[in-house]
Image 1 (cartoon, rainbow, N blue to C red):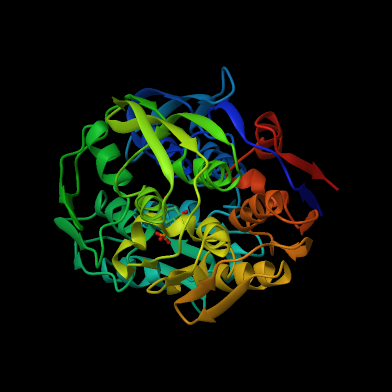
Image 2: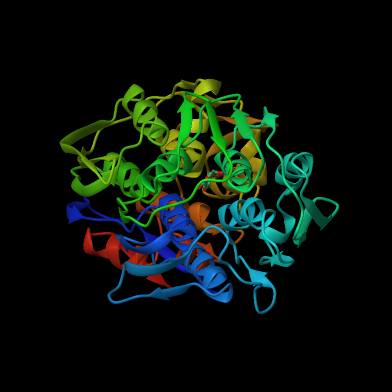
Length: 432
Ligand code: S3P
């Protein structure tokens, strides 16, 4: 088990680029594998989650070259060119990998089995199994939990589906199955979620109609190889955005950050709390908005986070908990019950850890009430959750004495090199 020690640190300074976007990297491999022709992906996230997805396609006969770090050349096999995998497909820690693959594999001519690590094995899959079954898929699980046994050779048909939870993974699984289905497949979301599946389908030449909170595809078309430039992951940038905001005298520049408006809800929230985050060099890169962010220290005040903003910052709550616990006044979070079924129960893990550092947090079923204050040092447990581990590391920078964080190895799923990059900005973070 890897533990970290995060110690009170001086200002964060310099210019950094965090690794590539996880959501886009998963999808880039998937669409490139199913396309006709050879695609080039640059800025690919070399994280354990996305490497597991690349391995899954290699197991199904797709040749993927890695000429340089963060670059992949994918020799697409066409929509019907995958072959039966040479064993179970291990998705590791990745909910995105498993749920999207479930949709895609439901339409194949062969059987497959999706497995995952201890955390993924506890995550709800009924949310994809149910709509896929309505489309004609046959997927057997253990009471809605992995492993998933997916039976091939099923005839799929389009559906019109309104998922009860706002989830880009559920939407994407259904749309991917929709590529193999007869007729039209439509998803209507309770709140708009990240739209990378929609934009990437378009980039790979598949006609798709979509708008805020809905998307529609028809089966039976084809994907054409293209090149994908993956921007830096906003969710990884978030730890540095908050760290530079909280540590006095900081001024940090984050380059090439993906600024898709369905992802950047944390910026809206932090600015409402008083943060000083400027955007420069705004541009489109491979169809996605990208900017450099200049973050300067600023004192924060607590706010009521509107429930409607949850989907746009779903992965940023662990770090928001840290920001709120140092802000002046009270922060109320609600409508965020989904946090309980992420890589860990993020409400429980963050509340327990920050309380161990002296913070005042009351858990609610779908959020928390957090009183701002100061952190003492101490010991916390990330519960193997990458985003909780990195959030506690940021808390340690502001603590009175060092903070020891247990179980940090899974940071490599989304943010390889986090410790080194943090140190390069002036953070005192070590592996214990
Ligand atoms: C993701 C969607 C979100 C997010 C996850 C990545 C995606 O999950 O939390 O990290 O790439 O589609 P949900 O769809 O479960 O909200």
